[in-house]
Length: 237
Image (cartoon, rainbow, N blue to C red):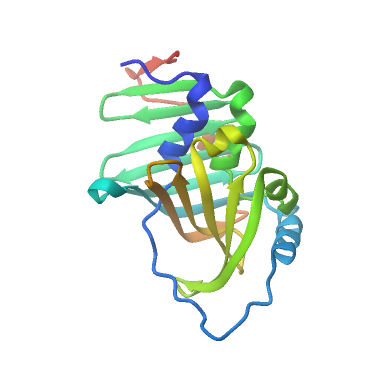
């Protein structure tokens, strides 16, 4: 099977990684948050200076609105500040997504196959999706998105602030019309993200729980070391 080439990597990364099930987030009626866009971005600027890594459990859901279909996967995510990320999905079927610098790997043990993509000039665009909120500075968000402050809420007994991001880049907006991100006020990392596809009304969500910040993650965690006998391919356009 022929997979997408580098020109479609940004789309591939988004479809594979960014998604979650809609959560019920109670509004704080009668209360006005002290947070603003400026104060949240200032906080993110400060926190980004000390971000090194994180681990978390994730719940990833792709929602197809027209048929009311929810496709959910669960697993663990590992992120390091030096452009390294690994997601190990466990349920319903195991697979691994590995990001190491300018390389992206998709490993499916069920068919013993790993696909390797060179992010190339699409690296910066991919990072807008894959690393959104993971040590992202407020200035970087302002550069890439029109930002509005939505609310301060409670999610999983965590106090969070909700931002809505509209991509400035026209090519990105062709894929994603808006992004919602819930930031945990205790660590300023994403508690939840929602990506709305342009045109279709479909969306992706990711929910993060059991988040641990600045844990030691060795290089071996991000090594592209696959079992013997695995078929390795580099799909082209």
